Image (cartoon, rainbow, N blue to C red; front, side, top):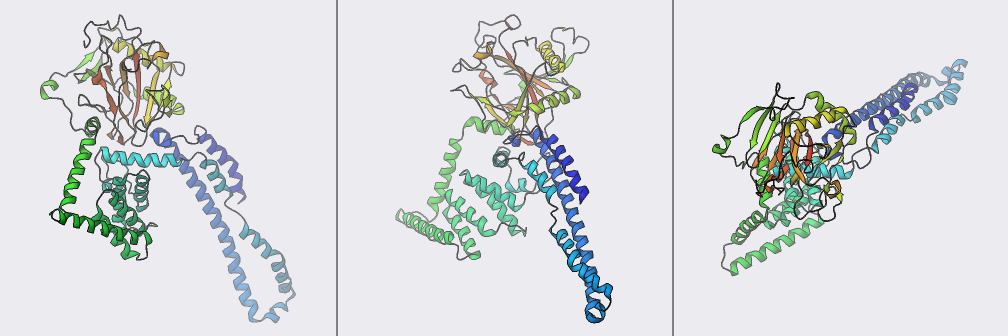
Length: 544
């Protein structure tokens, strides 16, 4: 016991050291890289918990030995009480036991072995994820489900493409997702996940969540989607389990009334019962489909590898080559591997352009600096977080490490563009379902002050390093032209955002698809107009 208590200050110090980079409300779910620290936090907690269990077991073992000893002694003494106490030694030992030893046992029983565990838990709890993190991670799962067209059962069984570590979702997990969707007035996903929870309960999974609670959510979410007959069926199932359920009894009468009212309306119009509802459902489906933003549909299709608009004829004109950028002295003897990814707009990829050591160094420098990625509000110009950009980013300069200057120089040598007016190297790590929905890198005509404070003009080009492979998802897609570029560790893609005339190339509107499985690290360099006057001369033609 003493040694356990002695270890506490050291353990607390160790935990504080591990967690010093954390802060409350740190948006853990927006960066897989930072979430890895939470695994070590949980590991430390488990170690502390096991120490507590061992201490409890040691205490109980001492109490058990004492109890067994007293039991055998009492059994012998009570057979002949007077004869037993006739021995003065036994009389003395009885007085001693009751006056001293039972008091010691009482102290042992009352001793608190929870100090170490509770102290560790208290230290770490202030660095735990928040409700926002849990909700954010849950909504990310729903987003992944929609983008990659995954069934609730596929996700619940952990059968995700590219996943190495399969994890099954419990009834409680499914119920929690359904509840979060319900709180967001998202009855579509509420139905999907409450149905999955019900399915697992019916398959015999043990859970603290009962069928009555699940059926209550399920019937209401289905009713909210306009399917009264199905809502009525689930309400009847609920009442079979709990006939006194007040809300369900009220809903039963209401649903039956609505269906009867609908039946009479159908008869009055000479329609077959149920025909109207079927027609309305088809019309509703049609309206929902028309309401969807076309770009959103294109974006999701491209993320799934569908709808890529590269014809065989155009594909035949894309090549790979060894590239030295007009006999740049650094690359004449060791040209880099370059391949065409797309033709209009021209997107090119450089292979093996970052070494493993460089990648690890950049990640090491960036990780402590990672903060929730922001976007510039087009109206106010204020930087703010947005639900459509789920990642954390950090900015690195040559002051942090000379390697950053080496990387910047490499970009200049290969593009021929001036880096002195470019933005610093931005490193990003995506979170659970991490994404960045369709956007432009350059400032449009309706945003004349987009980069005014930099004084370096518009973003003429984008250079994007992929610093990790991604098991599934995470592509960079260009919805307007139907292009998709997939992450490949150590490679980089490059494209011009502006035509030589300075006009924006709207075909470069792009997005980072949600990461389904894996950990996506990228870094990018936004290159600006100033300093490129002689390196990329202006054209008289607007689209040249």
